[in-house]
Image (cartoon, rainbow, N blue to C red):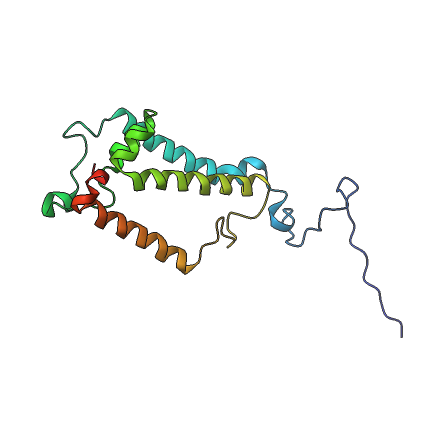
Length: 172
């Protein structure tokens, strides 16, 4: 009785030796290395295009003019500023290159824009390098439960402080 040795897998001559073999059988290799750059960057570029379109719209339609956007229902019914009050004015100011005006309208929103920019840039780099991002459960920015609690506490603190007399500098 002789044991049969498995036949070695054939590697095409144009594949560099450091590229792992195609284990999925679909021609993409590990992590979708065969997927084109355009396809890998489609989601982050599409998200950025949507955000830029929203900022362009807000930049063209002034939220400081009455009647262009609906009023905040919480502010209208209770007189309390929600964490989003002034967010459109903030976006308008950012679209017009006025960061200090944006901070005066809604400082939390400005920090949210900056946070989005950081997360988007990380997402873009991960996709551009060919790491799995679409259809794979690998977070771009790994968050823990405590991060959600911290973000919630900051939003709550911002909301409470902007509605107290000494926090009037945070009102829009």
